[in-house]
Image 1 (cartoon, rainbow, N blue to C red):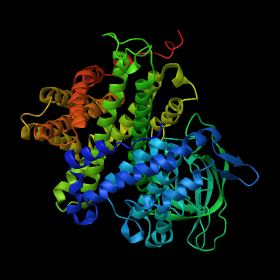
Image 2: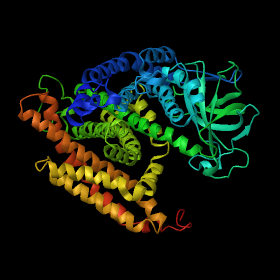
Image 3: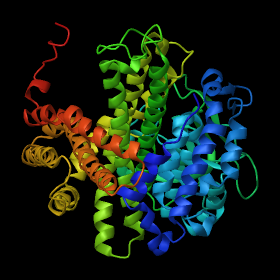
Image 4: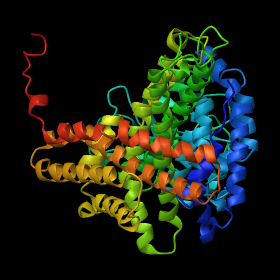
Length: 591
């Protein structure tokens, strides 16, 4: 089926719930009027459905092709044309800085576009997606010369970018990297080493690819404190000569087959230092934090497409009769959407998708406030929430994005397991999002091991203030008591971690993943209460889209009755500690 952008839900969230339509009141985002935001939603939806979606299945079936003689990579049929349309529409420049040819629009709008692109072809969306992270890192840490050399063409989409971290012997533990950077007489560096799993490392969509590469200088410490960041172009900007950085092959993957995932060999390639020597991790995390939010949108995008496909199937597939009596008396059977278990699956998809979208756009809005609001205290509070929620968005949206795609496949039954239907591809494509840009377990450890303690615990206090202030200001808030209970559970778990984890890192490790999930479910509960409150007010005022608003009230009830109670066992998991988890001895595993 053709993708339908969730335009009504987006407008409800952006305009009625979050107030993103008021960002134009801030000087930085003066152009982001409600009319412009609506136009972005509509035009991005058309592009996704009419240009990007038609390339998805062929991308999966053809995959990328590697020529070992030329060491070049060819993308699937239609990718170049679709990418060109994406570039010509200015979508690569949407929220990029004005001084280098960007449009300077809010980051929240990029989140919207990311979801639509990832719904319709995740593989194709990876090429401009990684480029955006490279733009952010260079803008934040590059010299003026590097910015002038690379940013305009990266922002225009004429060139693309990569992130080169992982090596055959190390992934998360980047202190083990072996790629070396030797100073040249002209101020550049000779980069030698091998990187693996490099998205968009080599392809035929553009003429030049700009690699951001982690490497170690001579004499640098063999830890993460000895890592520097370098920009290494495929084609040298000054001479047009080919830089000796080549693709050594493509990874053979279960999904995202239209995304070129490359082994990259740096054979004395010329590179230029980004930022200060041995400060590469700080610069790279600028790129990685952006990428983690983008990956969260990948999970949401796939979940939305899976929901649309499974809903369409459930409305048409005839099988058995409704338990309450025939709903389609003139036909041989009823559509399966009448069956309670099918409805449970569809409701879970719909309600989680809308909650995840609210969480993502709430975070995107805070990101915009953190860089554009005139009040320093508002900027700081917004930044606190962005830092705290970035690993939550990445992990929860990719966990549940995959789960919802898998649930959608189950709705289709045997049809879902065949390549005749798109669900199996969505499941395969979605699995990687829980792994790359830092596995979801690593995200949970970042939340518990680093974010909770930042600024003396200020980040999580800001979150509690956000939610409790809402309850104080809205004594009639929908599902008030359930939300209060969730906040109490999160507070209890936070206190438990603060009391037990500092003296025993294994306690932090054991609690991390359930704690991240507990936080996600609680924040989404807060947002569902807000959504239900707005819907109820609009219904009472006699305006708005009644089916959407009535659906919001039912969806909120489903969330609080059927999904939020998971927090009870998550709290038990956290506060029961590590003992049963760590008790196995080496000889117990195979006994």
